[in-house]
Image (cartoon, rainbow, N blue to C red; front, side, top):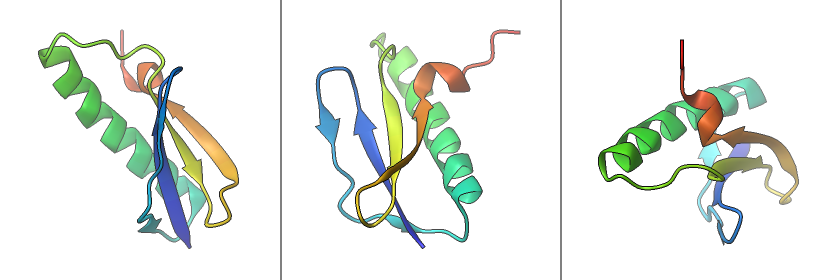
Length: 77
């Protein structure tokens, strides 16, 4: 199944036009977590804001299936 990873903030949305073919929604969630952690690392190094950034995982019909907030992929413990 194709999953789309739309990058969103509180002010804008960048629609994923390609999508990624993955077996399950859980696989899509893991991919979004991995990508979010990579992006958080880059943004922190650039001293840029991450609050409000998220991936909205959607199906090929545009239905939002799950949301991965960047702040939720950071471990504080």
